[in-house]
Length: 506
Ligand code: NAD
Image (cartoon, rainbow, N blue to C red; front, side):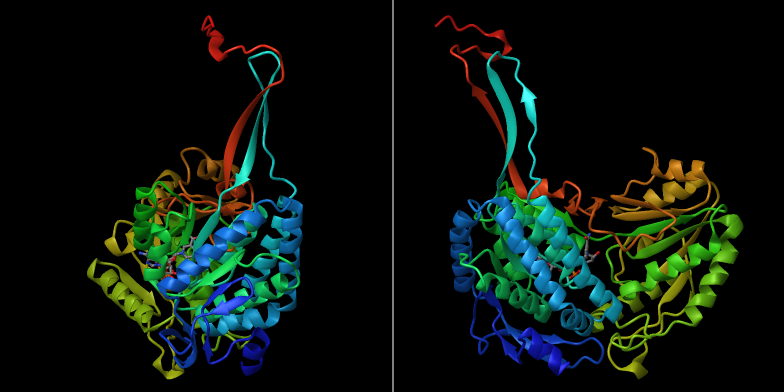
């Protein structure tokens, strides 16, 4: 890994605050230490952003905003295009770092960097398509239209499980919209944030751009709270747990700011008796154990129609028996470790609760101490949708198998949780599929057919309903959330007709 660190400009002790190319923050002061979950060793430190440094970042961000918002959008797109190119160049080392610091397997680490590249490409095109509508006025010699203006500094607070991609979903789109970005990554993956900031700063250094277009601050929830309370930040895009989202939503709403919230999921796959069961099993395994069950879109509940329940269960038992768990950098590994010891404890506590509530763990769940680090065997459990533990998101590889009788009951169970991120149906019957996608079907932000709940592409708007927070990011028209809309009416005539036919008599 030493070569990766050198290529990415990461040392043992690192500054953790940056506006553009200027990194500061005394690494000798308080710092957050990063550990690899593969064996728990400390891999480096990043200095925490102090309050006065945070204010300095905000000053520079506001100054940069003044210039950046007046830079033509296609020119902003050109800078983002170059960031995409730089990410292509650094894809291999950055993907390795994601894998090493977060614990997801190398393919997934590289896939995350690819998502950054894809959203940069998307944003370049978007920079020429910040369209507003024109309307026909009810008054003669009048014209009406809507235009979209940049918002200001956008605060991005991100989670450990996607330490680089989610930032890019926000930052690349915000940048072409004319916003500047202040990013606080997860305190569990500070080296990934630092590496991304260094890659972006190389692009900024090649141009005569103001400091403070892309900014990094480092810290735990306290820094996030500064951002949530900060009236200089009109939009906070926060990704993380539901309690975090509640707290951020409360702070930002109390100052009448805006949020994009991307919070926890509790995703289900509905498998009917008309499903291709071979395909179902493959999708379920990938969806449940990918990123060791630490994706917001991980399949947590497998709702299976009674007639095929046993066959699906047996196929999964077979597949789970042969999984290769271990070093995420080893290309043969399919599941790496959990992020930390606390995550392992939470998984063990959840397994106990399944038993207490009357469920049965039919496979896995063991802590693999012999591998060092925070490795576990993924678990399969037969459970009921109504169990309290099933209603919660446990951020670990536990897949609940839940039987249902009719499709209507299956859909009701799929919807019968407080979260609403991602969902899927496996069926070859067009009527069943359309019922799942109808207004009475899935209530989630994502509803898939014959593919699992995870692995969203950047082209669509990403996000979920209910306690998942309602935000949308990445593709489609998600860009609109990063801009303010203005309606303009222009009178080019000689008269001053009033709307609604009002005559003031003056
Ligand atoms: P977390 O909530 O512990 O932390 C997320 C981020 O929020 C971190 O940067 C943290 O420092 C910050 N934070 C925590 N409390 C805060 C507060 N009160 N005010 C401001 N900032 C605060 O989440 P995590 O453990 O890093 O990530 C896992 C969670 O994230 C899961 O629930 C997962 O489903 C969710 N997630 C959701 C999506 C999505 O798109 N819906 C994507 C990734 C992860």
